Image 1 (cartoon, helix red, strand yellow):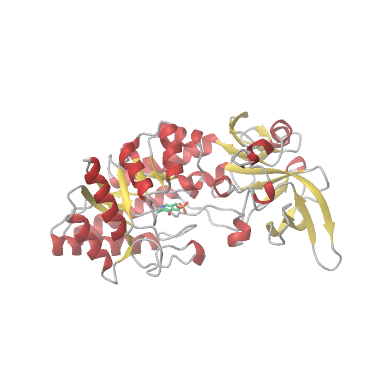
Image 2 (cartoon, rainbow, N blue to C red):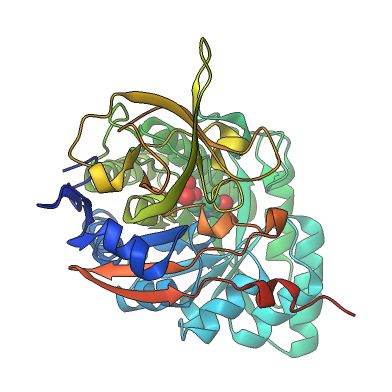
Length: 433
Ligand SMILES: *Cc1c(COP(=O)(O)O)cnc(C)c1O
């Protein structure tokens, strides 16, 4: 096992990904390529669904935060597993609907939904719109009135919690582009406004405190603050919220030094906290929704590259350049995110060569990682970067006019194409003469 049980070394000494030989996958599908283990995503969905039902009751509905990894086959898979999804754009809504995802199980997020987005949500019959601010509420009310529809909504609230992670991915602060803060009084204000709208049905509240969280504490703090807010809203307006969405954010191990989380145990603990606090506050415990992204899909992904130049700068460092980089994985450039990498065709050998893995773009910051321990590679080797299922394909760009890699789904050793590799023809498709 290498980091996760579905990753191992086979008898050829190659990395195997749920029974499929990584070197053979690279040969068949080319590089760079995203490999994705279907059963890892399915198992994670089941872990969340079963734990949520045990902790929150039979109507519990975990949502997959589909911004983490979004294409048709993923929506189909998540629909089959019985989860809901959260979408944050017209493009995600379109993909979900086209994949046959049940509209009533979609939650529509975003701090700046356009009128076109809101209209699309109304037309499609999206189950719940998570309204971010008063302007959006007014726009949604007007569009719903015009369409003669009523729309179920949650309100996004900022509880003001620093989850002690990277600031750029911490979104629960008061000073945030997301939601309405409780401490400034704006959360109460938007609640009153929502309750006054004829075409909007307020079900409850949403918060999301951050990402790559390894402790239950931020969720406990968020639950305490949000339940207190629900009690205060009830006192002030008489409205009893029936749903509380505590967001996503549970972390995954990217390196052997990262902690592993027992998701079911954390969810059980959140259930306890909600029951106990609700009883103490004298309110009916709301239905709890969680919306994991990363923790459902990150571990399932491996990116395969072909090694190009290997450069040793005496007295400085070693550079290993690969045929992809920040266009297929911008996370090191954005957040200095750590990854584990290895040479897939010599996976059984010790990783005793320390290198900076660089991409092929004309940009010094185009790195996959620094100080990475690898088998000493040479030109033509296959480099595997692990745990790339979340926020890699989803964040991919065509920088330097590089076509986006394909996504290959692997299940028990069998591989199938889920997203085709882009061609040069695709790159110029929308260019006008
Ligand atoms: C990004 C996001 C999530 C998912 O976060 P993960 O860290 O991937 O679990 C859930 N809810 C909202 C509102 C988000 O913005």
